[in-house]
Amino acid sequence: MSLISVRTSCALAALLTLGACGEKVADPSTQYGAHPELPAPHNYLVPPMAVPQATGWGKDQTPVVPAGLQVRALATGFEHPRIVYALPNGDVLVVETNGPKAPVYRPKDYVEGKVKARAGSAAHGGNRITLLRDANGDGVPELRTVFIDHLNSPFGVVLVGSDLYVAATNELLRFPYTPGETHITAPGVHVTDLPAGAINHHWTKSLTASPDGSKLYVGVGSNSNITENGIAVEADRAAIWEVDRATGLKRPFAEGLRNPTGVAFEPQTGKLWAIVNERDEIGPNLVPDYLTSVKDGAFYGWPYSYWGKHVDIRVKPQRPDLVAKAIAPDYALSSHVAPLGMAFSQGTSLPAAYRSGVFIGEHGSWDRSPLNGYKVVYVPFQNGRPSGPPQDVVTGFVTPDGKATKGRPVGVTLDHTGALLIADDVGNVVWRVTSTGAAGRPAAP
Amino acid sequence: MSQTHDPTPPPLLHPLLVGSGAGLLIAAFATDVIYCQTLLFQWNNFSIWLLMAGLILAALAGLALLLDVALGRIEAMAWGRFAGFTAAALLALLNAFVHSRDAYTAVAPEGVELSAVVAVILLVLGWRGWSLRSVRHSQSSQPGTARS
Image 1 (cartoon, helix red, strand yellow):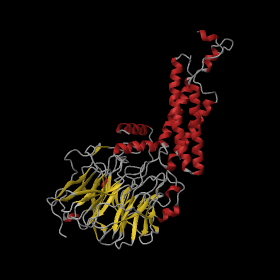
Image 2 (cartoon, one colour):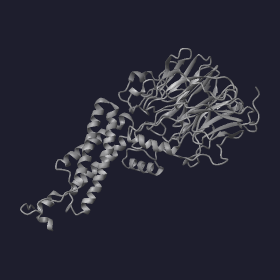
Image 3 (tube, chains in turn brown, purple):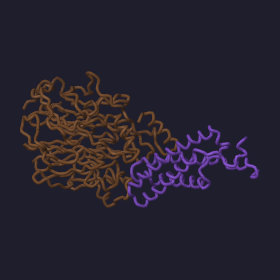
Image 4 (cartoon, chains in turn purple, red):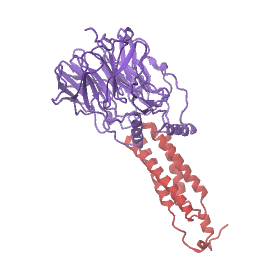
């Protein structure tokens, strides 16, 4: 859908006084931290949106980093890279993937398909994991191989001992791994099923392991924006699952998390944290996406309420008993930033200002006008808790006029030199951020 | 005019399309009501498809009406009925946007209210058929049925 037709629809909506185009949108900074400002929800004829055209990067173009940092492409030419993961020997895994084809249940699904194609989200995913080896840490890989091929929309990856776990969209798989290996031919061993099915709206399955390696945690997104596909298809979804490594048995660890796209353990306290994408279409500043510690057995509201006990009237029948249980998350990132990747920064070789916090890849969304996200931010931590507003680390993915995206950041991680790696699924690049002048030197062991 | 003495008026293209489109838009009111009663999402989806198909037929009906006029098959338009059908189509278009929302607010309250208004307009107009040719004109132009 073109920006013009969006504006025309907005004009129609405004004319009929049911829309709210041109409304003053509060700055995202009003929605950072534990107590975001939450405006009243609004029902639109056409929700506020802006769809930048995905263009890719020109020759020698890169994202923008602040003074003291530099950014270069580690490798290019991927097929929709979404997750980067560093193995202990320094090899980097790049998960190239996209979701299965979305069914058209409503005319809107067809329109959304066109919007996604324009924004670069419909591109073919490689359904494979590529290995990059940059042993001398100069930012130029000496080796690039297909590590695991023919996966079903993989996303999360985690290594525990010699077991490499891959979260495909429909199942958790285990592969045998020996250090230095560049290609795994052994078939994956089925560990447990993960919710997929015909709709599979939020298809990504994020993955991490507990510090002692005994449990795996899988983030499973909802099967809709806000139950428009019925409540039955939401079984086992919008939750973080705990999987016992020894037995494969699983249980819901926390629920009501609409789309937990990243899970990671905070290194100082050893507690589980997650990034979550909240619901759309009730306003440009609703609902804030968030970063939160994840409490065992907690319910975070979706679909019945948001940010604690703010009821979403789009859900019928309502569940006052569950709303009463709902707790607010810890830290708002502001609305529609679409956090898709997280990495705690302990061990980074970036300057001291980045050494105690979390990097978050904000993919950005078209469900807001003006745009928000489309950058990598750093949230500082003290004593295992966020201690300040998010800071921009990598920007320049979207043009200043907001009309085009050269790239969109997704997964983030630290490599063996402590550099920050970023998967860019529109530019099809893995970016590497280092301290100025530090790129050619591995960090001291 | 030579047609003045013809007892049967020329066949029209648009009434079938007006009537079928109206039928779908009236059905959308029924599926909206069923959704409100059952809260089963599939009835919500039925409504938006019925609205969309009804609007496509309404657009085709408009083209057919233009063709009927161009072919000289309509001596005089029933402008009151034209205004009523046009209003119903525009309200149904507005309702399609309302129905593009997710879950309950796609139907309640504005969606089912608009569906009800559209259904009432169409049933009242449809009671006298789906033609937009002025009945009064064709009656008055026939010998022996002259009225003021």
